Length: 210
Image (cartoon, rainbow, N blue to C red; front, side, top):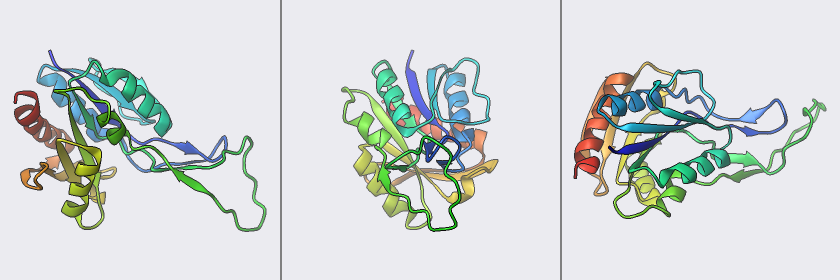
C-alpha cells in the first residue's frame, strides 16, 4: 500500500514569546486531501503547522510550529513514503533575532531584519530516491501560470496546483493543475472536499499508477 506525506497549514516564526510571523492558511485543503487519499486506500502522514481543523483519524499527524521543524519532520518521514503533497503554506521569512522577552512599545520605529526560510519541497526533492514524486501548491496574486511553472521547476515537482488568494479561509476553491511542460492537465472548482478529490484523482492517475 502506498504511503503519502502531506504538509498542511501555516508555520510560525516568532519575534518574541507572544508575537510571530505567519499567514492565514487554515489546513482545510490539507485535511481534505488527506481524507481523499485515505478514502482511496492509501496510508497518510500529515506534517501540520498550527491549525484548528481536525484531521482524519486514520492519518498519522505530526505537529510542528516553525518552518525548520516542518522541514525536519518531512526529512524524517519522507523516506518511507511514495510521494509528497506540499499543501502547507510555510512562512517564507524568519526574524534574524528572536527576543527572549515581549517587545515593548518605545514610541519609535521598530525595524525587523528577516532571513529567508528553507524551501521545504525543494529541500525534500533534493534527497528523493528513484520513484518518489512530489506535488507542490502555488498561491499567486498575479501571473499565475508563469509563476507556478517557475516554482514547479525550482522545487523539482512532478505536478503543481495553482490557486489564488480567494482560497484562503474559504470553503470553496478553484485550482488548475500544471505538469512540467506548463500544460493544464486539469481544472477543478467547488467545495474544498470535492476539489481535493479531483486533485487526488489526477495524482493517482499520473503519478501513483504510472
